[in-house]
Length: 182
Image 1 (spheres, rainbow, N blue to C red):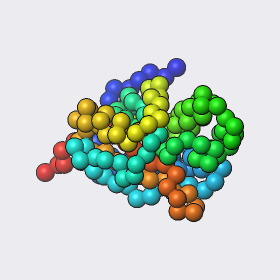
Image 2: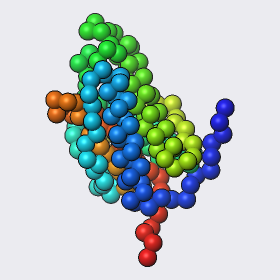
Image 3: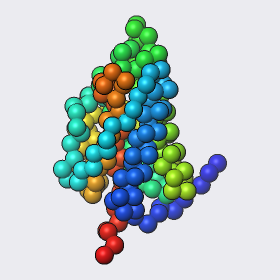
């Protein structure tokens, strides 16, 4: 079992933006694998934490705390779960419990791929908490969490299907941002 590494000194805003973009591209690949269709990451949106509001109203989300070499929140935001939004993970006649389980599993897969890509890039380990599943107003829930953590910045990338439809968003809320060097 791997040990949790000590947190890295705060990264600069450009470093965090680059890591977030790397994570978003990996999240798109993981989501594409799960849904069985093409998914690409849109442009990274960087917002001061106090002004962060998700770019779209997302009803559903899976939120994780990240600890280790880099800490903060990682969230996957989705539209209302259904066989259309969850692909082969659920059948048309799936129960509410089966849909909730599928959303958690989708969140685990996407977040773990995202965080692994970021950890590989910085050469450290990052562990994720047990997921928090939010089935109503996930966008408001994440905004509240970012506010409670007094986040300096939030990084969000929409994930698009090949038809241009927003399939999900991946959001990274780092705990610390270093001041730029003078």
